[in-house]
Amino acid sequence: MKSVLITALIVIGAYSSVMSQELYVFTEPASNMPTKSIGVRLTNEGMNNPDFMSRTIPEVMVGFNKNLMMHAQTFLSDMDGKYRLEGGSLYAKYRFLSLDEAHSHFRAAAYGRISTSKRPTFTRDINLEGDNSGVQGGLIFTQLLHKLALSATLGYAHAFKDYDKQIVGMPRPNNMLSYSLSSGYLVLPITYKDYKQPNFNVYFEVLGKTDPSSGQSYLDLAPALQVILNSTTRIDLGYRFQATGNIANRYTKNMYLIRAEFNFFNVLK
Image 1 (tube, rainbow, N blue to C red):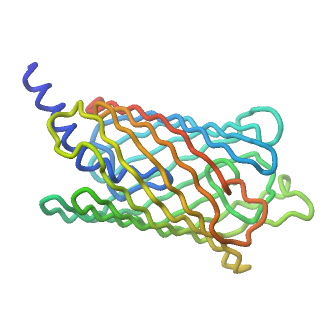
Image 2: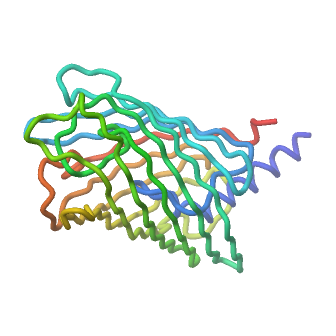
């Protein structure tokens, strides 16, 4: 029994080492977490707009099988005064294509999200991770090439109309097209030996959105660092800043992100 457990941990470690450069900080890959596993995340985001504000996001992730996983999030922040519960979100991702080769693979997935938030609306930008109530769907394509992983996302979001939260004179969010290009590179270990080796990854992501009705848009650049310990614990540190754009009063503009994630493998029956 002990030898079986050790073998399973080594397999999980090897899997994590190969896939770790796909664990993007600001976006999701087309690949899923291991089957019958549960992950717990705690994310903190901070920004100046113009005063310092922060948001905390507790999150639970479940891998039902190799193709389907779900996330459940809650949002708390001090953006409207004292720290309070803002709302929550459910996210699901289904992988519908997988092409595997030695040291490389290609994945394609569809995703959907539904969110609720009691925040008043200040901006045309739609952010379904705390700022707006609405739905979103899209596609993700991820290519792994040995130690380099590349990913592209295309999504469309619709904000629910809630006139009680609308502030007079402020833009009313309606629909938003989102797109991203992400890259991740596995720096360490140079040679994989066992699952206890720390993984060190570097990321660079390009994140953009366009409002189809007004033509307003923005493009952010987002470098990030990541450490994975014992193939189960993940620590992210990233920062996104606007390279160009004309959408006013954005909350995700010039924002840091710190995250801790803990994974529990093969715990679901």
